[in-house]
Image 1 (cartoon, rainbow, N blue to C red):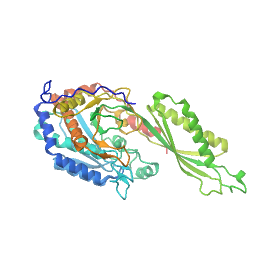
Image 2: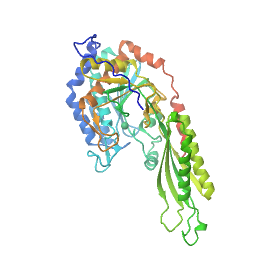
Image 3: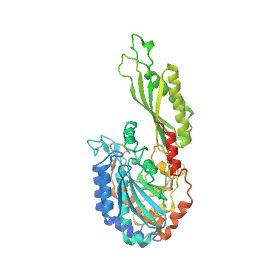
Length: 457
Ligand SMILES: [Zn+2]
């Protein structure tokens, strides 16, 4: 449930209030406006070639080309398909803007790829366009002179959940962790980063153009459970069999009954999919495969509920005399709430002065029941986040489409550029204040250890 805040006051030119944008900010805005057609063309091209996680080859190539054209040194092939551009300065804080490369499986979407069945139904192409627009503005030499520190642009692979089967193949290729950001943390790609900026189309119902800050969000863990029974003829000697379907369905029943013990504040969600439960109807099913996913608002509760589902499987197997084999898959960590940083609020205010932009800030009560691997980043870095409008339809649905390119591509590009400027101007004073006031939950080693300890293959 989102608690609605009253809409922040809009100010238009000529209305009360001083102009809060300085000349550099006005230039950032006009640089983005001047390249509107290029930004729209790039977003259109990405939308026309959707690709699944860790296979975003065309998307990565196009993104790398754009960044190279702006004069940035570009690295490619990070965790498979990741693309990174840096504008480095010897001293000062390091701010990274993230864009997500992958599309989501959505075969009935009108823009779905006929072969890979994915579409940009989560608006990641809009995020990339925003990142590219900001990179264009921030590559201007005059703007650079005003800023200290390093600005990086990282297009990351695979934000969307990757299923167990595909993960096994990826592990063989050296991709040990489950998502793009997680794998890039493991590989040290964020080691020199101080502050991360993320953005996305609105993920919860918000009527304003911009939603500033990072609302709390569920994390999850998943497991693939194989139930081993014993085959027998279903009519001649069923007493010699152990029914794996009965074990699986009993375990799922128990999980259903356990739901009454979930606390509201934990936002627990528990989902099961039976992938297999027997082969032929006149034999006792000797193998069942179930995928179980547990979502909750803290790492502790996720593990606590996962232990309950373990007991359900073990108890059912004990009752029928079968066995359980489990593969615990890495999930995503919950997003740690972060209120709107001053730089985001000031950027939105400044934009609202020159155009009819509406915005509001996240509150501590706001909650998103879905999950994203941005949650992992929030355990290691201050993550300045906002979401934006400009689309219609449902996230991951076949009706999702961008309807307002100004709001979905250009406005978030301006927000990113203005925020980076406000972070790194005046010797990075604002960035340093944010870095000093942030306490990470994990460093890279601690994070890697935690993930390895919680996954069991
Ligand atoms: Zn998404």
